[in-house]
Image (cartoon, rainbow, N blue to C red; front, side, top):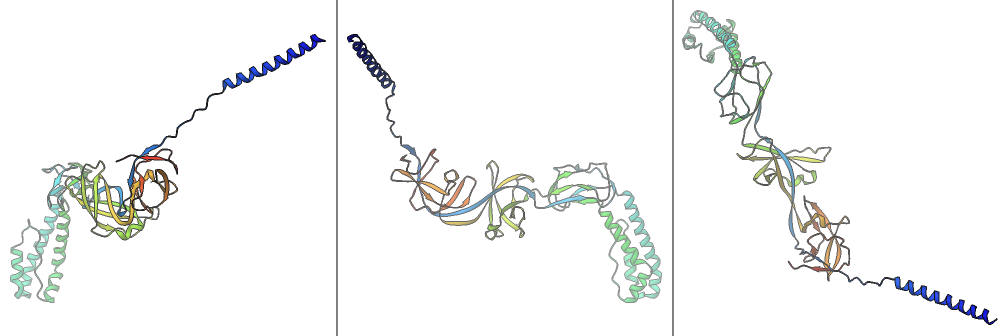
Length: 370
């Protein structure tokens, strides 16, 4: 009996000891709780200075020569070799011969027509002397001064209806205008420069057979250019003729000033934009060159310009008040390439100057002194 009691007590003691040992092992595995101190992020700020800010629209456009002529042939013949080769890049002064087409055969037909006219007029002189002796000297002087190698001179004025009917009835007037027509066509075998410029394209070479209506090339003026700027139709009322426009190369290495010369009154149905044409002049520009344009269209009162990355999707900006971040609602009026002009910020408000990753309202921050 005593033995059974002793064994029972020993078992109870062992169970209690095991439970105590297990609890000690579990307690020993608990990691000590580490207190992480709160970190205060440093931020750059700027003071809001409300002012009148200009709205500037920027875009890229391609230069087009203000004066350009597509050269076409109105006659047929072989292109002659001149002192200057007919090639792209060749420059000419006003009235210089750009190209000449062989007109030997046609020139002979012109001379033949002039000779026939002179013969007709000469044989009529005798009749004029009999019927209109008072105008004979006038017509005789015209015949005497006639030069087959010079352009046909203007017919003498008629002193009466009878004289006009008589001369016309002999076919003189008809023969005269036939020669004038041929001389006009003969002049088309030579193409002269309408202004100082250069060939930007040449589609034929010397010795090539030129056909009537064939495109021969393009002649442009090399200093006067235009560039087309698309702007939103809502800004059309702010763009007036003569308004200055800033232009620069895409790498901003060179800057130019242009003037608005035309505004298209029609709105593009697809883009809802209007086209503004700007004239610019410079020896350093070339047709086809791309330029960046900036045109001021209006001004916004009581506004501030900030980096676009600082504006939240909710149209709010972070400000610093009493050492913590706060949010203020703003009205974004105009978006530039990298910035945005907003209204709704109070004068002197401390704004974030650079984006802060993980920024949220009521976050404590430390301002970095500028």
